[in-house]
Image 1 (cartoon, rainbow, N blue to C red):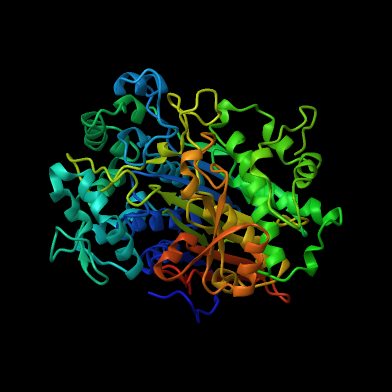
Image 2: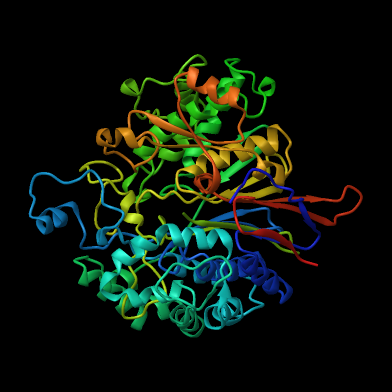
Length: 588
């Protein structure tokens, strides 16, 4: 499989577009728009279908976030649909269970039953539908396409099949006592092996979940037989999740955070999401540019100097994220405006060096002045005829999440988002009862700084790739004036913790790019060789990624909103990532 070229054209519409990683899911979203639903209604249809079509990436056992732009008021709303740790789970619980009162690992294993947090995504869907939906379609209509895909079967796409194949042995190991559970993700021709591209996959148990949701709403998942199956499975493996943990889960509607630069505002979800990384990195670049330390407009896209700037500013931002991205209930109430204040960003910009990399031994998070007070995942975006748009992201985290299937129900895996906690007592992101962990998934939007009009709805799935992707897309679109498709086609970089230095994990924040003393910089193979060598000369540890390994760089979707110069007619223009199976489908 090669991602080296793309001849995808930008997709245009005057009514609405769905851009996502699976064409069947995009078609389901368009159907809801044609029935009179808005971008929220269509987004939930897409999210449900993706649980069927891309189970290694997302599912009803996972979490979600969304940003929603109201075309009439120009207001952007945010929703945090993430779950919390079990109320009985703590570091002390782990010590007693392991019989080890002294030493614990720095983090939970991604395969541990204790990495399972309450699935928040389903509640997020229904709360968004009830709060922000059009009221013109029913939940049963919204879920109808997903039910059909489950019960009638669907041919699996190339990249979705590849993701399943990569994770199949892990699925088998995690469910070794009941390997027949894997048949809901396998081909109907052979239920014991991972599906190949084009194989027919049927998942009736998941169809039953959707039918319960259509009939009973949230109670169909967080109470009753599905809830009991989840809890029984977790507890049978020594986990602490309870029926009360599920029944008491609540979605949170939040105020999005933003930063202004180049005449536009970049919008992100506040912590526990890592959207803060994007805004801090962008703010540092802004301060460097305004102070004359760099001349951003003189830099060429994806030049050595440009990529060095992005890498170093992101690293500084990730140091702050390790301290400040956690459940907001465990942070100071006014910390976000202080972190995004001009004076704080200016102080962080002083760590940037044109001629080399940051000395990690001397680097840590900043402490903003207390007197300041200024104001594996699926991503998709939907726009509608009323001018609304939704930026939506849904995930079970790593491939198939924990890969634990509730045996008494089947059809889906439970997420392992708790692997993003650390086990360092006193850390803001340490494991505690009933707590949301550091979250990698982030939707984004860009608006005009003066009018407040939406300009772009966008996102780039892929773990710790996501802030890097958002930063690259913002500058591609706003500074370099690329089209949505050109921005998505451009080669990308990704920052990761260095596997060679895993034994030197700082044990803070999540296991992100600065958790190790050396940050690994991954670069797609079609980046010019002189740029790669230039980065190495500056001190970066660079690896070049090719072939299907480029899934590391995520799969993005972008919708641009504008209007005709001579009329008020809406114009939507969209791109879909060449690294995915999907496409942008216009409404007619």
